[in-house]
Image (cartoon, rainbow, N blue to C red; front, side):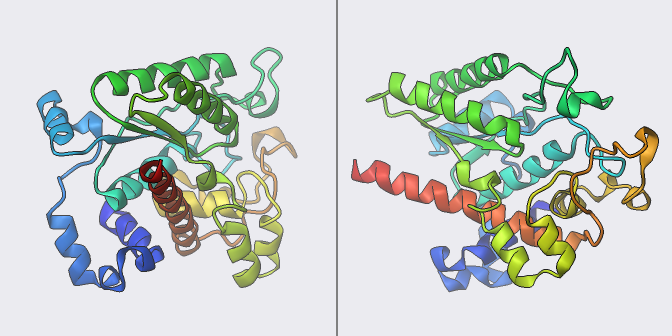
Length: 286
């Protein structure tokens, strides 16, 4: 799906925050024509980044994904495709943010012995201190160049603790400097972002089961179908794969669809935007 669709999800979900008129397709098109062709920092030259800073784009989203097994039916880059999609939508929803390259290497479990996702070929893991050091250096780089809001958007469970620790540490160090770091904790948590509540209200028995948590299940598979449909091997859903019963799947992916994935991504985007706005409001008060 194209970025125009992603932004429309976010605007539709938060129409009350933007004003009802923004949910109208004509108004959305008007907003989009006033925005730059890209929000991805890696697709810009350094003078273009400098100009964006000059124009007030002082927020930068640091998306963290992961490279891990996703059962026999999903590609190992699942989190990276999803978070690139959602990060773009969040940036366009904010209007003053750029998006850093997706960090594809994150904690995935013990390497030796290989535990958790590392038991499956294709998974790449970083020790948490290494991941934290990478995040810290990314944040320091952006601060030096004038970004004042560094937003950590993590699409994998193993990323969350380290992101919070880095944000807390840098915020203590940078107190009074005007530069702050925010770990977007509400984005990935399916209770906080409303995914589980929505599934319980609208889902059938399979959806309710998936809403109890899982991996490479209904939620994961639907999100990837919406963000990067080429990454799902539909014919392999429910198959044993090469490792017999140890498929790497927790839960049931049966019934996954792009339409459901679009709704689930919309909820994540809305949760991130809402958290950023609350955080910004508190910063202005203080």
